[in-house]
Length: 130
Image (cartoon, rainbow, N blue to C red; front, side, top):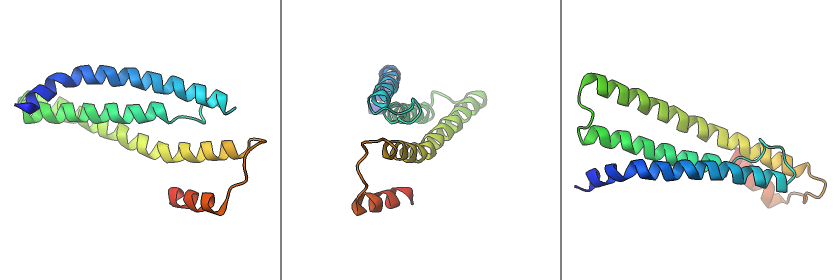
């Protein structure tokens, strides 16, 4: 049914998202240069696209199991090993996202023409940092 058609389309979607990851990383580099930041201080679009690509990988693995494409113990062992790897990568991206947000905020605040943060800005930062 629909799950089988979706599983057939996922490899092409993953290739599209791989290109988006590369494009996002390039855009992050351009944004960092435009904002006069270090190359590591602006990483948003690349990780955003990678997070979605990892989600598609996870979906592929789930469909492999649901559609009985991986049925032997060695196949299932490989699927679940890879699934654990994908989940660990997603968790690492999530924890890194908060750190990157703080790095970019602090880098922008050090710019000579940076606006003075308002009370609302500080309140939003406190919520995001929590």
